[in-house]
Image (cartoon, rainbow, N blue to C red; front, side):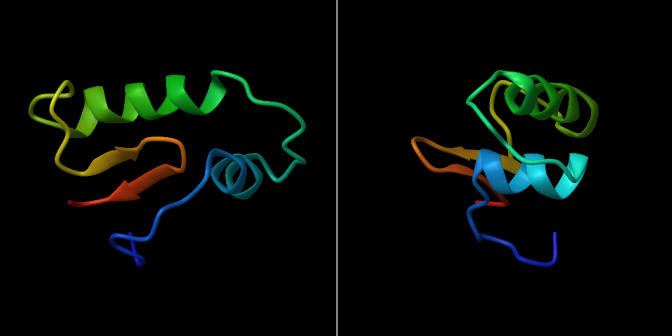
Length: 62
């Protein structure tokens, strides 16, 4: 949240949260992002806070 509009890769998110090496692409990050959206967004299908940047990762805000 301290870096609005900065794109974070799935690898960077995984390694920061689980403090473990990201070895392969899995759905782990996508599942947790979806759960976070369900919790914080008014409409999780049209997120305002956690935005997907296709092919890159995720960012906060628009």
